[in-house]
Amino acid sequence: MVMKKKPVDVVIIGLGWSGSLMGMEMTDAGLDVLALERGNDRTKKDFLYPKPADELKYGVRLSLMQEPRTDGVTMRRNTQENALPQRHWTTFHPGTGVGGCGAHWTGVLYRATPTELTMKSFAEKTFPQGFLPEDMQLQDHGVTYEELEPHYDFFEKIAGLSGQAGNLKGEKIKGGNPFEGPRQNPFPLPPLPRTLTDTLFTEATESLGYHPYPYPSANASQSWTNPYGMQLGPCNFCGFCSNYGCLNYSKASPQTCVLDALKQRQNFSYRTNSDVRRINKSADGKTVTGVTYIDGDGNEVFQPAKMVFLCSFTLSNVRLLLLSDIGKPYDPATGTGVVGRNFTYQITGSADLYFKHHQFNPFINAGGSGQVIDDFAPDAFDTQKHGFIGGSYIYTTQGPGGAINGIRVSPDTPAWGSAWKRQAAAEYGHHMMIGTTGSNMAYRDCYLDLDPTYRDPHGDPLLRMTYDWHDNDMRMTEFMGDRIRDIVKKLGPDYHTTSFHQVGDHFDPSKYQSTHLTGGAVMGTDPNTSVVNRYLQHWDAHNLFVIGATNFPQNMMHNPTGTVGALTFWAAKKIRSDYLDNPGPLM
Image (spheres, helix red, strand yellow):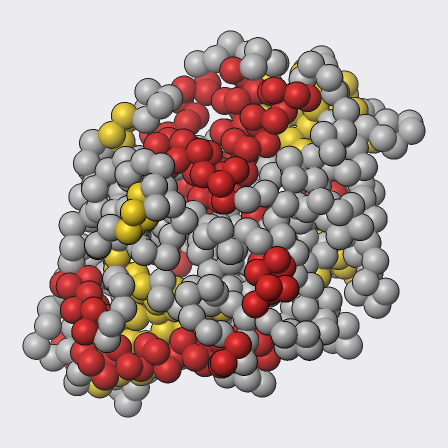
């Protein structure tokens, strides 16, 4: 028997960054808001020292992540392969519990560039007919940088962002990123202190004519009180950022920046261990009526609501739309349908440098500490000359310095035993990393759908990922690898190793890339190629809004969190100004 709860104005599915920010906006509008989180509750008390400083628990066993046995995904590289389920997380790390990925992320918070938001228009103006592959599916986001800029600015104040502006109201500023879109205000906080890694990278890249700048970091460089009255303390470079909750109230997260303020509001409530299985449609299918979920006691519950906000992880957003039969599923054979379309990832590569006479002290680091160059952004150089569209930022960052994941040894070192121990001790702290994080275009044969074979414990199909590298993106990363080799040559290490993809390589899900998965429920201005409109409102159900990196039509080179936050506020503004008084399609 299905239990029925008292109706609410708003149900939010997922209480991470977008869910908590939308909770603030909707409660501020006077609505009764309920958030449903399928994982456990996580508060700042869960991250008090020494709890997070456990590399085995969080860095190796990934205790802040979803469990593949209940929330797994199947993978294949093409439609001729049999998709197989992930048994443990490797290539990406989806979070669970209150805070979601916002609790365990690294803390690098970027804006998209104006070009990254209008990639199709850029391509049409820049490249000759026939240059781009026929199966590439570029789209504009449907919203411009100028429209999002004030929302980027507000989210950066929420996060207490540390950094150096490079383009302030059109004026280029030395030491910042000259390729970024114009900011109306400086960063809330100055950059984090430099490390030896940063200094060496800066000197080498400047000598090559590039423009290094400090990472835009959501690790606070100074004390900060954000617009919600939440306080952040200065980062102490403890080294426990990626995969960890912050023990110092320094890394921006929903817990540190939003949730304690949100929980004080009388018109907000949340339920944990509430696994949403369906978004319920009205009899005519033109609106949604609420959600059905399984509670912590195994009961099936129907929660009526006037509006539903789907704010979970990229893969979870797409799966729930497919399970709910809302929107036409994408069919790669015909190119029709929208749900699951334009799934993209990111392309990464790196070089590991050993310096006998440099000690980097890698255990002293912050997730958002580092130096970067954007000289190879998609519109910063002639990519056509090199045979691709897209771009990448090149960076260095301190660490990791953990006793398990932070060990680096020369390639000829035995994999175990006394010889390995001697070499690990001799080389610890003498390694420096230079990496690249690149864009990934959308293709007709890269998509998400429901797996016909594998099911979760509730009996519902798992999500299936069909994905492989394409030559355009491999040419891009080969080019970036050569640029990194130029930097390595300038630095002159005692030895170095590299890891870069090449044309002809296939996607290997056994190796970690990033957790920057995007697409599958993309935004746009055409319902034939997008799931939601430019205000993130579902084309087929006007009281359903889908929010997250799932909205990106292709993946940008920059990390997605800043744009997810800005899009959340962008949608909220339109909802509050137009939708609440006159519910209906916004386009």
